[in-house]
Length: 221
Image 1 (cartoon, rainbow, N blue to C red):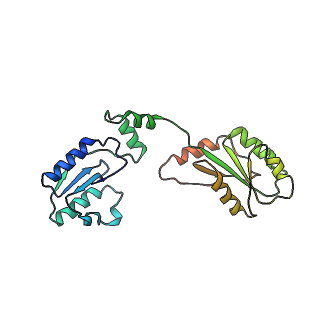
Image 2: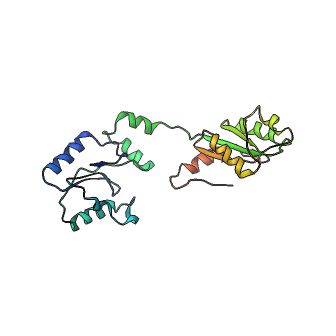
Image 3: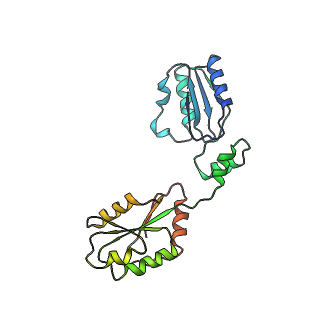
């Protein structure tokens, strides 16, 4: 028996029904998901060939249909359980919140609106002339500012930056500095800014809004 981990309305009753189907003589039992996949698959014997559908079909709405077709070609009897919704997208979350079977603790988590934490990372090298003003502005507008990565400044950059952010030290080179900052930050989103850049106060909200889209993983201006 193989179960998915993203079907929050799956209960012991579904497992009981699955085992009953197998004990009743079915070779394979499947729990259909509303998105065309399945949240459960059980077998009376290790028919691993059922996982051999076209790789291009995985994570599409054709997974269940292709699996059933494979079972039919192998002359395996199948039985379907009641369909459930798995949790993959914001639309799934909205639909599940309307489902009275959704456990209360999961509903509470889905309703909780927690902004994504953004770590602002600034690689610097001899930026004494601008870093204090830039960090003061960032700390005022974006209190998530947490790291400055110095690449070996010989002026007063470190002293100017220290009151406003954590200062890390790395080998010279912007890529090395950015990687050092990424390793030490705590945010879910990494925002790299230059010391001589003036950021509009609305930028952080725009970043969070864009990254809320499931098909967006990053961007730049």
